[in-house]
Amino acid sequence: MNDKKFKLKKDHDAIIVKNLDISTEFYSEILQLREIPNGGLPKHITWFQLDNKVQIHLIEGKEEVDKNKGVHFALNTTNLKKFMNFLKSRDIHFENWAGEAGTTNTRPDGVKQIYLQDPDGYWIEVNDGGLK
Image (cartoon, rainbow, N blue to C red):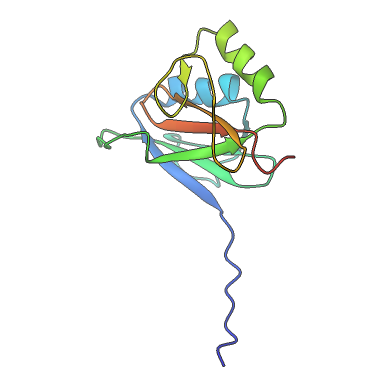
């Protein structure tokens, strides 16, 4: 019998950004994530932490990364409608999976979702899943 259970939990995602200041502003002001100390790493790296302790690390660099909607990270919120209204008030484009601007789609499991892009073009899903 195999008793090995690793109990893996998500720790962080790291993404390459072209301009750390612009991306830091987006993640702190638009997504309203909390910036935390970066563990003593160089100043070209910024860390954010979500409420569930999962982190997002922004690393300023010149590398180009392919971006498409199928490769994204997802966040959830207790008030998707309020978040959508906030995005509209800030003139931030968002769309559903099919690409229709300013609206949601509903997955077969009943979760509503939208997609937006950060300043570097990374796709971010925001949904109301798991919170019902």
